[in-house]
Image 1: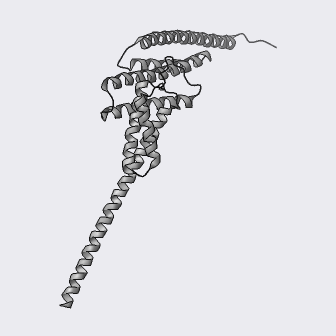
Image 2: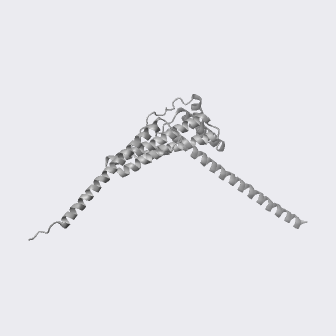
Image 3: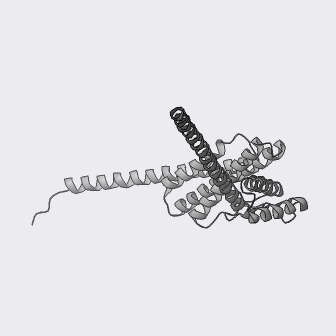
Length: 254
């Protein structure tokens, strides 16, 4: 009787150990998933807050500002569910929800004019900021958190702004190259600007006017290059004729 009892207890202990191990591994997997999800939410929160604070000076409308606040609220709620004891998250969520109730009256209006940054790094940051904002706009629309008409309107506005930045920067570089008499480089910059203008699926006053201006500048550059080639050819022929004259000139007797 004792031996079967011992065997039964051993088997029971093994089964219990296996069950405990399985439960422990399951808890570890859940904790790992929880940490991964929390980290993902934290990154989303930081990115959204960064865009809302707008260090890159991207023109943000009231509608986009409200969408970003809702995105922050949604993210904070998910984080609080994962960390119910986090008081700082709860306070931040309360502040955001208060802003949403007030309608975010302090939201800035998008700038009407376009002022290019002074250096390339600022320009890169501006373009990155616009791309990040457009990605967030599409993500929130896919989640059902953004009205379709608002998404279409704002995405078109941001696309137009992105186009203007690209075109104006190319024109600016082309003008500088032309001023320095680097006509080949200037032509490449203006051709890139025209390619960008031709690559969009919509037309507006800015696109049409810039197309006409850039096309005219390219024609002027082509004329200047042609004139320059004629001058170079004339100088080359003049030099060749001079060399021939010197070669066949009567030899002086000393």
